[in-house]
Length: 329
Image (cartoon, rainbow, N blue to C red; front, side, top):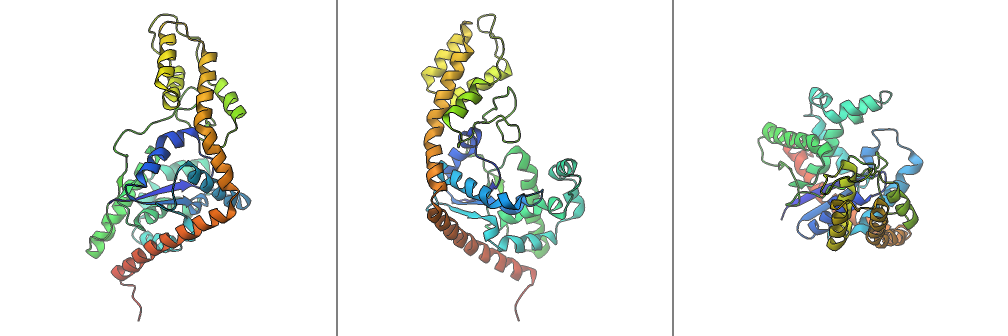
């Protein structure tokens, strides 16, 4: 059985792309592997966090992941800052991370471009903190997007370096987890790119029906096909991609035929798409509300998850300290 670790951003809401892409696979994955899911509140501190919003953000994200199907009885879900061993392993790994290699990471270059007034040590050593998260449970598989592939490669480098320096085979070289298939990539409603918070082009799992309809009806389209079997423009192809993810095959076939014969009415297509998205999102939205308001349940989840995570983490840190020669008298 593989040990799989996945980090969860502590800011923002889950959108349809998150759910149809990775999250549905996470729900399946947790029953096939030893899974750890953590909410990365330490990571959020590298930019300009609002202390009045940090805890509410964690609260909301936790409720959304639980509502989407992460089962705390099956997997371990915890808050990063509830596990102090993260900070200790981060410190120990920093002893073998070199400033030059950290300065060359694409994420650091991007962050200092966006936040030139806040170039802090946390930004520089972000890949080391991510490595500590992964190596803390000696994870063998990590689901990562394109923007995190370099960080995972650095985690493997840090693991190899530690093993070589101390002459051990302790840390595994964590590999990307692709769920055995190509991930579903849900595009945004603005005609290009992927669905995401920063792009402002998403349908969120917490959105009410009216908001979903309004967003979908404003989705970018073109003037329509002028000849039978015309190739789709990117914006229209994106709408059909979302349709294929949420609608029945006969619905997709109907609108494809309408497009191919130049009879497509984008207004009708969008109305159908909105209702099919609502059918997927509405039950999750109601579960989010119920869980969000159940403080006793959320407290139980993070308390028990933290206990399980600390048990795993304590074993790793104790062994790392022993390997490095940090021993009690």
